[in-house]
Image (cartoon, rainbow, N blue to C red; front, side, top):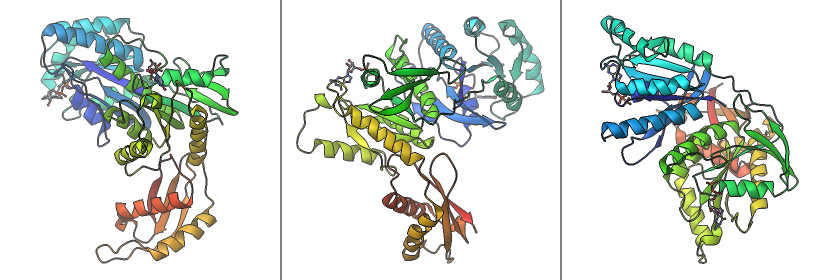
Length: 433
Ligand code: GDP
Ligand code: GDP
């Protein structure tokens, strides 16, 4: 699990340029928001071996200065509340503005590390100009040019030093994160799990901030629940609620073994839910999809099948994921849901002994070997599961670089057919032998 860094500042100071530099070629998650706000982006970065999540809190497409001001205040408050560190970006070209001063006022009261980044310092003259930003009362600043990258190293050195060591209590118990959009039924689901007499056993201080793991003993299973969006809600506006929930999902997902993804059946498996799904997949977490509020859906003969197909289509090619239709209201299949999450947890930690793996996979490879590429034949000699916390397999061969994606997918499918990896992403490496 990694710390969260938020980038705040006025429009046009260079936040997204800096963000893109931080995440480099990695993919960002886009939280499309309508109205005056520009899309927000979430991505992963690392510096000196320390990984962190970074959030470009977006900017504003249009609107009067008044709107800007209100929006920026909100953005900064959210960042103060949710991030572990804040990069406050200002622009040397425009110098100190009134809005910069307002933001500084909020940040000075924040009990979080704040890094004042003076951007667009592309040359030595501008280095000298940057001195006026001392007036913001935030102490030392870092000068940088997000466009050419100069200065970013110094800022990142200082930044990662201040990020909390997020220690995760080593636990043998499955860690489940209940995630989904606001209103999907996460709180109701958790309440149903906890029951009236609150089966809480202990609180584990998972992080430097409030504890996010709570241990439960329910239905004969012991597991930890990872705090997420639904549990606390302070945001006043719907748009912010969404922002909160994505941020919290990011954090909870990184901290869990299995994501229990709640979908509101009446709203469907839409883009925002898919974002959360891919985030889990990219972090190599197990996933169970629960289509909740099934009591509200008019059922025709095929609706479960059709609904399932629709979701599977949306999550291709990683569609070997359990999908359950539940109702928290009527307690329908709640037990089954936890049982399935436990199964996925077991699949994720499953280790196939090398001998058995080769006994099964080598004949399959013999029968369907990788297609010749540039006139060369690839010979796969053997395979093994790597000792990682989630399933990764290495296939040893003479020309690993000639094995293309479709063949890797073929291997993955065969692994899934022969061993149960339902709900768990699999990584396949081709290695030189
Ligand atoms: P945001 O609204 O804060 O996200 O700002 P953008 O990242 O979209 O940048 C706004 C403009 O400033 C764009 O035209 C960028 O190319 C430009 N810009 C960003 N960083 C730098 C920099 O370091 N130097 C200069 N000269 N321009 C920059
Ligand atoms: P959260 O924002 O994801 O935590 O969602 P909540 O647990 O607060 O639920 C949002 C609303 O959906 C509440 O009014 C719940 O009573 C309702 N709800 C939750 N689960 C179900 C369900 O299975 N069926 C129906 N009909 N309503 C549900």
